[in-house]
Length: 442
Image (cartoon, rainbow, N blue to C red):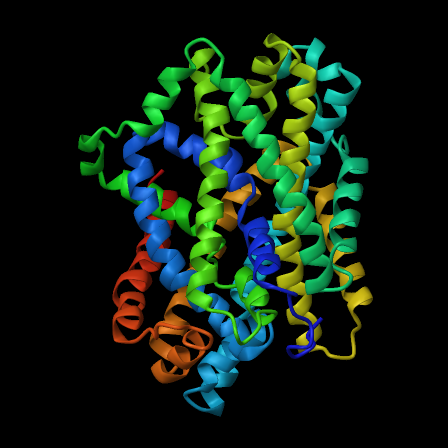
């Protein structure tokens, strides 16, 4: 997988669509609407947009930059960043890089199961089962049973790994198909939802900020956390895509474009889910049940509901696979870089076996739900913090700025760098501390 810069995206839009594919996932489709619904609606959206702007311009661009600088993924990138301070620090960085890399793998294990659930819902939509049953009983029936989604799990893992066979080339080709379809489907769904009685109240909730809600620090904390996860700024995943980025590309520009399309995806998903929930007086913050209980109830009640159910779950499968691609690629590239005698097919097979083996023990929601909570609360925030500190406090300033400014018409200097050091890094630290504090207290 590590081809030292020989494997690259063919053009800027191929890279952006692939990066957007990584960022667009369950965090957009159910995470963003649920967080927006339980944290002040429009006020949360304002706070979220502020953090997305900061994290894309500084945090995401730094991860792209270190990937391009090192021309490899997580392990090599941390080693390269720390090595700007000398050989011994480089060895330390190479060891520390295993933590965020473990986060990518751990989240992939649970994420693959979630997408298997979505594929199960798609299958039940095709057969009509989902349209003629109590959605709650249907969901509880397979989510609490052992080995109920094994065939779907195998299919998801196999398809995802097949899209990684040629590295950047196959990632780019698959996302050039999946991402436009994803956006088109959700636009169609949003138009359909707009005609539901009472949907306008959902739009008011989303786009009319209650400014007093911004006095609540937890609204800002949740918005910050959502921005981190939505943009996949976790100190690991986006690094490997940066390794495939051409030297002539303006890193900050492509990072901002990634954030713009990711935010559009989250907003359009919310314009499907939140107005629909308002129209049917359903809980917006229902988590996984939002996809497998709340939405099916709505789809059962509208004309052509089965058709809209099918295209909804197709869109979610595409979003899930594109995100899973990035998690597998981050781990696989780093392993091949660390152990160069392993070829790409062997590494992909190893990842597939691990994922399938873990999935057999994680298919029930009461297992993978807590697993994802542990990864999100402990490993991912720690990885994001470690990455932020590594780029803006350990890596030499001039080296990072040189990489950021390759291909840039307008050069970035002290303002960009110290925004990262004194705004972005504290945000990562706050997120990490708050995640641990909330786990201890609650």
